[in-house]
Length: 357
Ligand code: ADP
Ligand code: MG
Image (tube, rainbow, N blue to C red; front, side, top):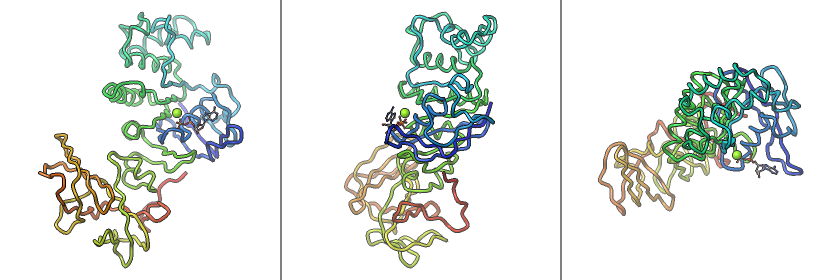
């Protein structure tokens, strides 16, 4: 196992720069997710760690070694892609052992490692099958088995669950987490799905447009987002942002005053951020018109209109709301976020600064 250090890393394709100086310290044994919208540079960064893409600037280290100029085979990493790229004419066992065979590992050792990986992944009874006779989830496991048998210092995953249906994706997510708890191999996992990142990772790197917006544990990002982008990207349904004007310790939202959280100093145009589960029914609340009510049984999602702005609220308890009705909702004062005109979240002085890139 090894730590991975990404320092001032840049990437350009010709004249186009796509990564703009990234810094990430990944600890030995840590599970880190790279998350962000499509095209933000996640795969590019992962492929640079793997050695599949040259580095335009900065350094990448795996353990004590700078790997910038090392070919992939010498980096002691194993990568799992979205398309599993299994050899169709080889059996599961042959697919899993192939890299070891190419590396000249002796037969008994290959068999030992393949048998062990198959046990970990519940593939023992499928070792003689061809990939076409496996389900999507089983193929995914074979792809992981191929990585496990190499016992690498680092696992690199690029959206490995994207081709699976929703139910299987959730099941494989749990399996990957169990696998990491068992093997404790340093893992970098790329996904565009914030829920996948939240549920799997020790820490999440949120990227947008080739820069890192914030690095933190799932709940740090959820509770203390650095800016509007992270606040709305992490969490589903998204955090509500209400436009208002701050003055004299209050923020005026469409004519209703809401107190600024203690210790927050703001004036002028700001946005009040409030998560859907932190809107509370209250006579003194903001008047909002119910547009759509979606009960799911465990909770009810309500879509509302507040002075032309879309608002989402989620209730665990049941209410008989109807479309067209006006309800009064107050942001829970303990969970109010204030964003300045530049989209940065305002903090109390005492509050710990988040880890920035
Ligand atoms: P993500 O994995 O986050 O969806 P990528 O890392 O694949 O994003 O791509 C990041 C940016 O780099 C995108 O704008 C993409 O168009 C560009 N890009 C990726 N590969 C190449 C390439 N081989 N040549 C030119 N541009 C590329
Ligand atoms: Mg990608």
